[in-house]
Image (cartoon, rainbow over all chains, first blue to last red; front, top):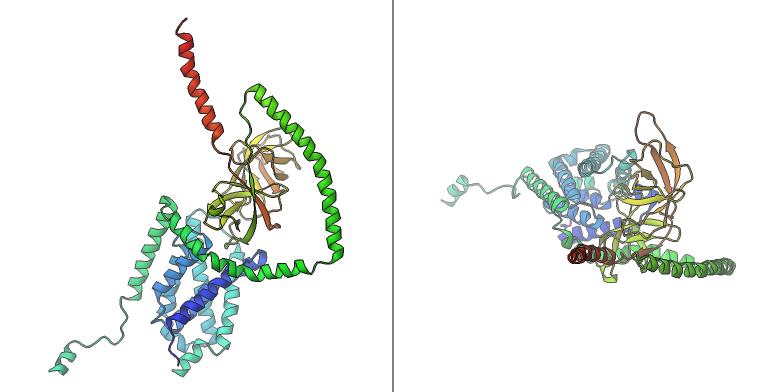
Length: 159
Length: 307
């Protein structure tokens, strides 16, 4: 297995941020998956020794700045998700694809719920069920990770 | 000997630093502190501005695909549609030219009357034409980001309008861009007046739909369906008489002392790429007024002193 360099992690995160910053509008904006979170989860589950809770927190902070939301909102949600992602990371090799997908889906939902709760505390209005669409599109994107060669499963099998 | 020492202090099998839970607690505490500082103390405005300026090239890069697409679409417009547009616009210019002449005459007359009455002159508000870079990142807040920033002398609080009416207000200014909160956002309130009878009220964005609410009006208030709401100009931010919304729904519930009034914005809140930012009139009127009021009590004693 090729060792993963920090450069590739940050480059992929930057590309994800670029995707997130595309001028989405209307329904596309509603449906837009959280690209940065997906890439972050991929690295968290693949190489937790390089990409850790601190990385997740920092990335969340960048997202807060880019979206203009309250400082630390996404940072907190990402750090929490990273914690839960890492706590089962070692068992991931035993999961089959369905278990892995549902695990990642739960993590995506956790992030969104955390952000929603923080926004409600900050005085936002409760959004409808549409709010959770990005998790759905996110898990659909995750299928590419599972079925392509970069999948975390194959990495585990190689080891 | 070294073997015994190794036995006594086995090297850590996994070099991991602090435990994940400790890290989590640390970072959660840090984010909570940051949130408190940002929301209550507003110390981080400069940090945010600097960072968004750094992100600006990335934003431009992200916008290139759509810009290229739009350019290509513009380039491939047929001669026929161009001619049609040209004819339509020429007609519109002629019509508006006639109206503008009348407006100029009225404006001079108004200024004259105001000077006769001795009231404060209405201030001119120069406008800057901006282009929308992208919608807000969060689909649940109604915000757009415009390509004018502090470098173009945009200030927070400026009104954003299009040719039909008010769109919103500039809420955050970055060096090269600024954030406009739309009138449909829950956070934005705008002082309005009913065009038909001059009734004043404050309109709030609804938040979830693209509508505007008029809360805190009594159930027997004189508002009808189809009434046009215009800016009252009381805040000194929006000029008087800009169209804001049209009343679409009125519910008078006998249980509640307030009427539930919903209005639909007139401006094309989600269809335009170009919007105008109106500068805030410099605080000449208030200072002028305070000078007058300061002068008055100063004058009256001297007037009264001889008597």
